Each structure stands twice: as structure tokens, then as C-alpha cells.
Image 1 (cartoon, rainbow, N blue to C red):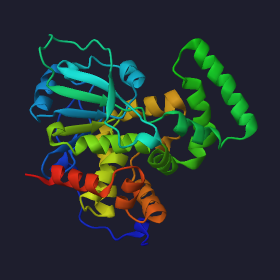
Image 2 (image 1 turned 180 degrees about the horizontal axis):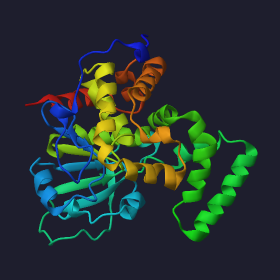
Image 3 (image 1 turned 90 degrees about the vertical axis):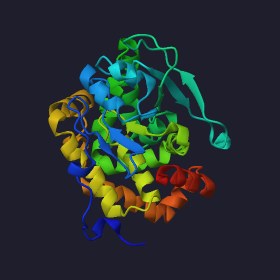
Length: 316
């Protein structure tokens, strides 16, 4: 398999063509030529005037790769969700991957008037569930594991949503491994969430869709990369499109650093979206599975499902 980390640069995507200038929604841009998919940072802080602009995109579905608690704790008035049904996706066991997508209504108090019918639906995904946490936990030494459990007890007592527990693993395990390894871990241990997201995108009634997370670069970047590869984009294109988040997040650089470095003590490199990081992630897919199609089959998105997704996104 070719080394995608050493591929020859080609003319790729740029923010002038793909970006959508909405001042209070950083990192917003089109993902595909038919404007079926958009990507952005979280919409919690969108202003009333910018909500009107955002609604003009006709978005029916938001795939929000934050857990319900992460969504609720995020600052902002969440004006964009005034006419949105909010649900969390329930991750089935590996044995039931072909079962219907199950959701649970999330109780929130969106601002604005009540609507007789909801015109959008926001799906919340918890990417960091037990199997992901376990994989990170076992990489620590026994004494690091013991110390982390003490932090966990403190977090539970203080009800601060595992802040010190995450900080400790950020410093001892995640930082030394780097952002690229975190992306690989998401591919492996959050694969069912990825599969569900792609199944939702394959339904025409869910389009146009907006894919987002906290900053629109990490969890969002991985899923967008898989979609683009399936649609035939080159690895260079995918990595360069991912790196546009460097531009897209310039206006909120300080906020990104506070939310990543100050809160969780992650390394400064975790605040960036560098082309090399995505190329390393894509190289892992090709080295481990041979192709993106084989990876998608492995996580439960079969050939027929992949073709359905392509048809939904390529239809005029």
C-alpha cells in the first residue's frame, strides 16, 4: 500500500470556495459539491441574526458528536435549536449492529416559541464510552491507574464531569501518544457511533445535514474524511480540507486553547488541524484495512449501505 503521508501535493480545497461566512459560527463550510453536507464548530453561540442565515441552508439534521452532558454544559443560548428535536443515539452491542437506529429524547429547554412540529433533529453521539475509556486506561502503568482512580473519586464527589480524571490521562497517556493516535482510537473504539452517523447520512430525508462537535475539527474531521474518501476524494484533498480548520478556527483561537489546554491539560498540538495528522490517520486505515471501504465493512457498513450513502450524497 502506498505511503499516503508522502503523497504529492495537488490543487486542493480552499476556504474561499467552501467556507460560509457566518460570524458567530466558526469553521462552517461545505463538505461536498452538492451542498448535502456541511461541517462546523458547535452552534450554541450563534446570534439571532446568524440563525436566520444558517436556517437558509435548509439543514434538516445535525449530527452532533458530543454527549448529552457535553451538549448541556456548553455555554451559549443555543438559539439554533429553538425548533429542533434533540435526541441521543443509543449504541447497540456489536451483535446487533444491523438493528434499527435507536434514540432517546434529550430533555432541554430550547429558547424561543413553541412549535407544533420540529423542523430539524439534532442527534447527539457520545464518542467516548466505556470501550474507548478502557483502551486508554490499560495503556497506563499500574500506579498511574491507581492515581487516576483517586482522581475519579474526587470528580464524582465534586460532580465536575470527570475533569481531573481526563486531565490526568491527558498528561500521562494522550499527550505522549499525540493527536494522530487519538484519531486512530476513535476509529477503533468509537466505530459504532461512526457507523450510525453514516447510516443517518444515507437517508435522503435527513439531508442536508450539518456535522459538528465542539470545534468541528477532530470527531467531525474523522467522519467527514471517511465520507470524502468514499466519494472518491484523494487522500491529499481530504487532508487539506481537514487542515482548513486551522483557518476556520482562527477567530476563536483563544477559546479553543482554553477548552483544550486549560481545561484538560492537553498538549498545544491538540488545538491544531495539521495536514500531517490526517495523513497519518488515513495511512493507518490503509495499512490496517487496505481501503476505506474495507474499514467501513468492518464497522458494520456493508457494500450495499456504502452504495446507498454514495447515491444519497451524489444525487442532484
